[in-house]
Amino acid sequence: MTTTTPEAPFALVRYRDADGAQLGLAARNRVRPLTSADLGAADLNAFLAKPDWDSIAALAVPDETWLSLDDVTLTAPVEPRQVLQTGANYREHVIELVAAGLTQNAERTPDEARAFAAKMMDDRKANGEPYFFIGLPSCVVGDDAALELPAYSEVHDWELELAIVVGREAFRVSRADAWGHIAGYTIVNDITTRDLVFRKDMKEIGTDWYRAKNAPGFLPTGPFLVPAQFVDAEDAHVTLALNGEVMQDASTSDLLFDIPALLSAASQTQRLLPGDLLLTGSPAGNGQHWKRFLRDGDVMTGTIANLGTQVVRCVAEGAAS
Image (cartoon, rainbow, N blue to C red; front, side):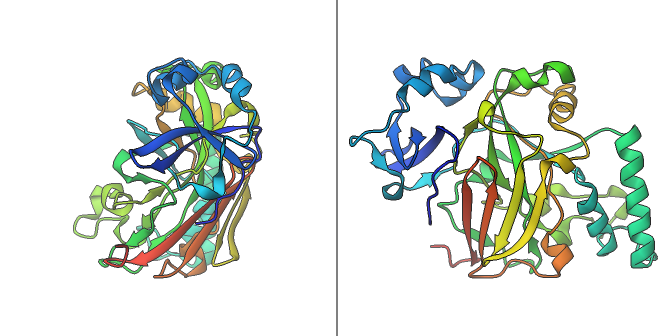
């Protein structure tokens, strides 16, 4: 894979070594290991509970003893205990999906479907609430792992998203207080098997996010965990290219529910723990819109402003080894 330097002054990473995964500090194009003494905490999640970014910044002075980022293999920069995903949080994305026929109602024309979806999203923004579902932490991998496409479907899709990395534990926090519970941000590609989203055996059940989104490796994450202070999360440019062709190109300013609204709403039900991921939703431009889904040999390149670039290679089931 190709490693890119984080645009932020520094970021946290995890990289492969002889003992598994080592927590590291990346600055410019170099990286050094971080110990518990450096963190002032037992591990990454303990640090994120009360992050002292000033102490980490004091260490971000690369010299010849640091490793080159090109000489290490980065993996997922986080170890979440919980992953929450946000559905239908970009207006145009939902309109695209409905117009493309990904609904329970196949009787509308494409124009009728777009008009229906547009009204639904405008009403939802004015009167509704964020929609969450649960992902499996075991699906979180780095872009050092190839994305193995399960053979049971040919419609695996991409959804590049800005992901909140929870800092201080959040439980029933207000929107005004939500910012204080965010340690940083990272990139997540929320892979989705489109023909498994809705149950066919009993339509009344509705969506089946477990089967559609939780195959092994379906949450490529990272490569950097960037402190919140370095990210304009309210207007971050999000792009995904498939084999060099741009498919998603949007800004988080188009979020239906913004960052504090999402974290506050998610925390009303469950305690969000340090290091947890809260995905903010996918912008328009998915494979369902383009009628082009992931294939063996595809390469996805995802970039979010100040978070670096994620490169994911796709392989057919059984070919990853």
